[in-house]
Image 1 (cartoon, rainbow, N blue to C red):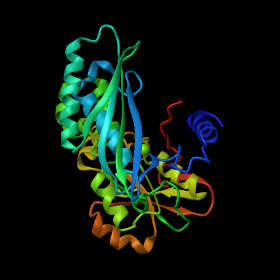
Image 2 (image 1 turned 90 degrees about the horizontal axis):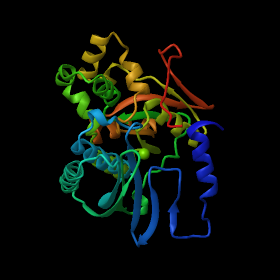
Image 3 (image 1 turned 60 degrees about the vertical axis):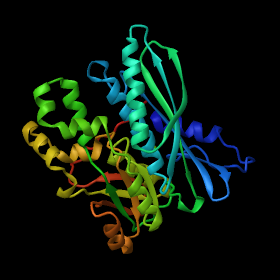
Image 4 (image 1 turned 120 degrees about the vertical axis):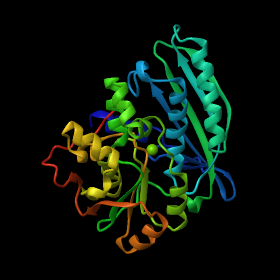
Length: 320
Ligand SMILES: [Mg+2]
């Protein structure tokens, strides 16, 4: 299999440790889960930001890099359900020409962000590198029964989303064009790219109500997220986001650019909301727990993913 999916398949087939009873959940989900103490499993994830891959140096401040690094990692904890974040380790590879003040600003913002989310930065690593990159490992505690895995959807389930859709992709476009006027006109879209809100409270509510059959955080776009849930569940997923999926800011941006908001909402990555499958009979409970939740599709028998009303114009982002 080609592409990112092929690489992930190799990782998942090689990194198997069936004899290790302490490993509760290995590669393939949003986080790893390791036995820690009774009723308190350790939930761990890691992620990084690479210059040239995830952002461009010309539009990245150290504060925004620190904020995004913290938030994309915490988002993976949120995607596991009821997880209490505890602490993180952070590191950086820095080019020779990166001024020392860049790193001290990064570190200061990292601390502010840690305090904002109630955790500590417990250590890290620093090295010279050919391109700037920033990485983090974050962990939290959870009880095993409070965890929500990716796998679990069934034919007949609904596809739901909570959090922004397509806003970060629009924000990244604005940043790449480098127009201050445009960035000033759409501050919410730019913020959606740099400061996604980890949906820890929403993850907690979904877990407590046992509202999701499968869940992940939306890092590579709704189409890609839905396709992953469907593949794990051996189902087919049909995406059909309604007008409510488009925020007023994205609507205004798309109107100005004469673009279809659906292509941002479906293909745009880095939104970091939660995408999950759920039984249709739980929908009213879900709406009570998460007033801003959206039904964005459904699971059927079969395989693959499709988006309605898009004339086959669906694209989704791959890293490899
Ligand atoms: Mg994730």
